[in-house]
Image 1: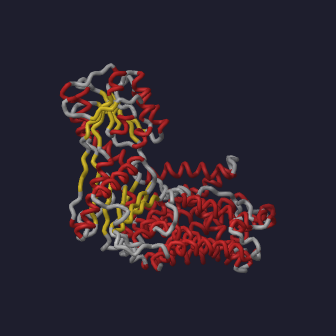
Image 2: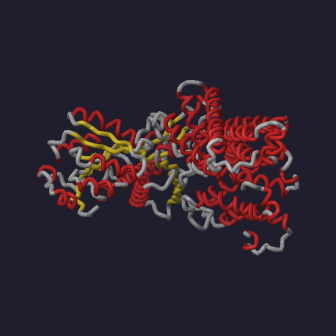
Length: 304
Length: 336
């Protein structure tokens, strides 16, 4: 059981950062952003590239974050300047991101990373994973606080207005397009950062990484919001709640995921899990949470 | 919805969400704890990243080998965990497997091996299988707890076979998927072999089965033969590749038996089932000896099965040379 909890928390903190990104895209600037699969792959690809080029893990994290932000900007550009529909814009960026990631990995579909060269330092050998957990928690904590402060600043107010009332932003002589682009850049930078953490934990980067991440992040986001709402924390609509919800949701999501997985490994389940059954979980959780909400709330949760 | 199905519709609304979640969580471990047998079964857990033909074959061979060695449901608890392509969660999967403390963890494929190596404790036995290049997978050369089987496509034998069947060949086309590990590895190996024979190699990249067939269309008639190495994408498109190649009377030489069954003329193949059985031998030796897995030597499994397709030969109007037929080839007769 402690091993299970460590595993859950480890995933919750690393994917939670990405889920905060999803929160910014879906809730703050209210953009149905499907770039996450691509920015995740691009993030881990650039992370591996920089690490192998000897930039050190700090440089690798910076590059990952920067390429993720670029992916977000590109999605915004496609939609604002070229008039690509919002859903399609993210999908197109994802395609490009995969192509770039393949280049970054030097044409190899799978690249091993030296664990000791990453921010997890000497924490090789997995379940000395306490160290990894501490590092991931630190990252998630710093990011959560930074995003909270940002959302409470003037820039943050304008970001929030961009999602809620873009006309107001225009009246203030600011461009809603620019703030939306900023929001998407930030969102995908966080997704890419989370990808870098995940890659460092896994010790490898694979070209199939990132497939389905977007639905994982959305599941974490809506689960977390529902959790906060039900626990009476005013639906997590305050800024702090907004930032806490994705991480808490990621925790709940991976708790369910790994409990079911572990049960199937230990043979506690009456049936054998097909490899794709756990994918069902993500989709059904999202559907269930949205279905459980009242009609009025459902309108509020646009664009989900 | 879920709540109603469970007959809990009358609970206050606020409680239902939490209730359904806690039910889900609680139901899992409870439902099984009572049934868990207390016997001294050996426990083996297999991790594989996604459903995929050669990985599945090697797992089938592994199971066969274990059964042959006398491991059945009475004395072995065998679990197969397939991550369904969720590569970003592979380490999470590996950690859960390690935490369930099986006697042996079998990691099938390169990414699964990388994930298991990162997740397992130093005293847990790991047997890897179907890893093309253990060094690149960062498998430590002499870890105390790791052994396994790597698959070595016998490129030299494949090219030798091609030359033996078509001594006049001067230009050979090949198709490979640049985003497949094994294919990239293969193309690097095969280039110098063709070069040494003075055969020009025309390489076309194709990362989907459509592209593979259209690559074959480009090559057909312009080269003396098409060679498909360890490329799962092209192998999957083999029926299409063969039909466009045969239309221009261009033979296709492959590196796996499956492709020959799908219409390629000939191959020197790694038998992945046999490779899986070799992995089973290692698992059995670990279980029986009680020694750390690292003390059991690793196996490099080299393909040596000669497989020919008689039906394709007939359609090409080709007769296999006598020396090839005396080497006891496996002959298939399927059409593509």
